[in-house]
Amino acid sequence: MRFHRVAIVAFSLTCIAAIAAAQSATHWDYRGKYGPLMWGKLDSAYRTCSEGREQSPIDIRGAHRNKALRPIEFHYISGAVTLENDGHTIVVHVNPGSYILANGVRYDLEYYNFHSPSEAAVNGRLSDMDVELTHKSADGKLAVVTVRLAENQDAPNATLATLWQHLPMTTGAREKITEMVNAGGLLPAERGYWTYMGSLSTPPCTEGVRWFVLEQQVSLSRDQLRMFTALFKINSRPLQDPHGRRIEANE
Image (cartoon, rainbow, N blue to C red; front, side, top):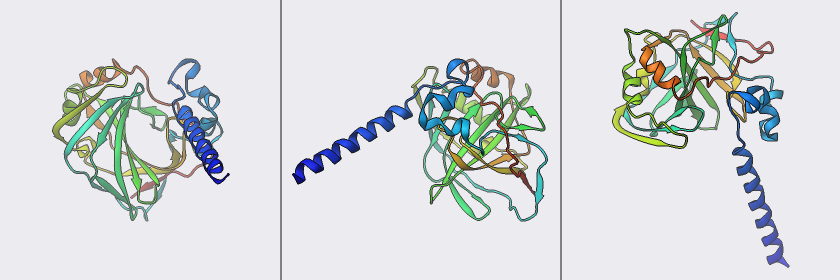
């Protein structure tokens, strides 16, 4: 009998894992019947996308200056990376070692990806593109650093120039770059920021994510922008209701 009970439990756990895997594979998109307005209805695991009260992205306006907020310390190291076309964006997978210190908390860089137009708006205005660098603390908390990019034909971005030489063109394709790449090349010289509590901006739209939106924009060339938008015409989530959330800015 004990063997049967163990077998039943094991089978149940296998079924639960299979269901979870199936849920995580639910198709979603940025347009049409699988687009952002429908995400919360596509899968029960995505319900937060429509019912959450701290969803991202939002329009940055009316920020409160907070002198207690410290500058973010960026400790990014150079290394090989792997680019993945996941059907929604280009994801840059990094080796361990890069991290930030944000108001006393260390968050390790997990990966970064790109959106066009930008997901965050500032006083109602979107930029041409953004890069969102996703970090995780030792206790599992997530922090996203957003850098907005603006087209400037005379100012191509050197880091993008390296990455874009290896763009995987089809969904599921991956390209390993053995050249040394440093995510710090995507950061502006001035690193003042706005911060608020939000969510992942893609399903399952998990909340409890600390967002840091850098105030200064970074340039990319028209050709660099066009190379990305040739793969993903629009791949950003519309602005979400802030529901009275407090947006703060460091001094």
